[in-house]
Amino acid sequence: MPRKSNPSDAALLLDHQLCFALYSASLAMTKLYKPLLAPLGLTYPQYLALLCLWESDGVTVSHLGERLQLDSGTLTPLLKRMEAAGWIRRERSAEDERRVLVWLTPAGQALKQQARAIPQCVLQAAECSLSDIQALGAQVRALRDRVLAHSH
Image (tube, rainbow, N blue to C red; front, side, top):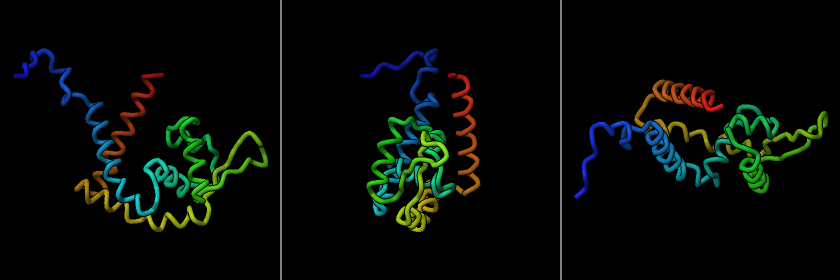
């Protein structure tokens, strides 16, 4: 028979951990996206990279890494797979050869049309309005920024 914890240990209960709520919500979101992205042949990280490129094409790899909060050890293999799939092309900047620019190919641009229904599917699954999702996203981003500022 399991032992009940001491009430003074409430701060250590799993259900009281914000980190676990965020982590498990992230897992649930990734699980939700998987069948939505499968028909497009995309993984969730590839979808995130494409979202950035659909906003602003021809950005540097370092800008993309900052935007996605990925280090180059994670981002480079991701971009190589996307390039091999024909969705992006990478090229050295003519002005500064140390910089690598990422551009969408026509196939990468075409995926945007195919992905248009995904946000609505997420809203329906979350049973939230767009304004609720946007407000929650703003709160989570603000939390992330405060935690990052504290950890540096």
